[in-house]
Length: 401
Ligand code: ACO
Image (tube, rainbow, N blue to C red; front, side, top):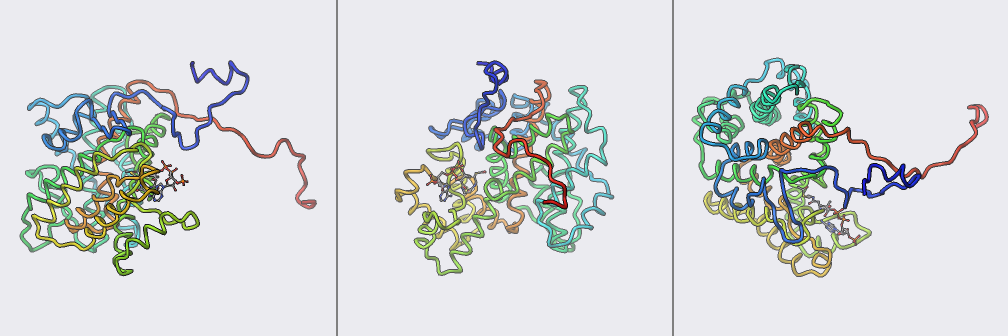
């Protein structure tokens, strides 16, 4: 059946699927996931293998261009991204205009959108070369925007990075080096962050990715589309869950660590509280990323010698949920955000920056999906609705209402 003709052919029938629970919006060759079996593959490669064997920028290349890069392609990609890691000084004026209380996701979304004004050619999609330029531009500039947003919030001077470092190393340096102090990279943290970014890199047509595709389908530029994706990611039911998980664990700790009390709240249909970091629209068995992240969290805490009582609370919740019929029946398992916050916290990343780190990881996926959508010349995204409002009404003058 050609769904697009359904309405005309049937004189008015429309498919109604709130939340698009079983509606495909596009054909895509980027990411495969099977929620029942807990399978996630990037361009055909299993996520476990990818997280183990390649680094974040190679994954970005794979997602965006479809193949793992050769040595030459990889070197060129790195160099081209580095060459774009400068941000116009005037962007700092926009950053300065935000109050310190601004949530970093709002700041990053605004700065990403502002990049179009500073790079007007970024809307050019007339050739592969023009698109490539925008791709390396946003990949080069995003770590700078992220680090600057964090430092501004902390009242720290901005750091311009060091292009002799790797992508993730440079991001950490720009976030954490302090004036007049010697900054030493911790390879444990570099590895852990690289892995986290890879695990977040793409996840087919989730809320933020669908946003990027639908905004891009109007032929808005890449940076505007990504800015919209960042806003979509911000919400606590999506990327914002990593911040919400940590805040929930801290609240449980502050309340005496009684996990059973919070389990009961999560099950109480008159209580809006949900166990953050549990459940997933697609994974109804387990989230394969959560397994890898859980291992990484244990490793990071062990290597850094951190005993975090928050982790004990997290483990307690997970154990109880896995044995509780409410969670078992509804197939609610820990998702990728349940453990990522614990690693970010161990790294010294402020809680409000957690979702921003997710955005850095998701950036290659958004780019890949936007590029695929443009190359396939997809039509503008424009869902229909089933109207349930008033039928035709007579107008009443304001004096008679
Ligand atoms: N805690 C308690 N109950 C839950 C939870 C939860 N975390 N998640 C779902 N449920 C319950 C719902 O109340 C509903 O119960 P009912 O059938 O008795 O009405 C049932 O499970 C199904 O839930 P839905 O909301 O219909 O499932 P949906 O697929 O629409 O939502 C979502 C998925 C948004 C992820 C949801 O599980 C949730 O809110 N989780 C917490 C937030 C979170 O961790 N989000 C991150 C998702 S991963 C990501 O974006 C990277």
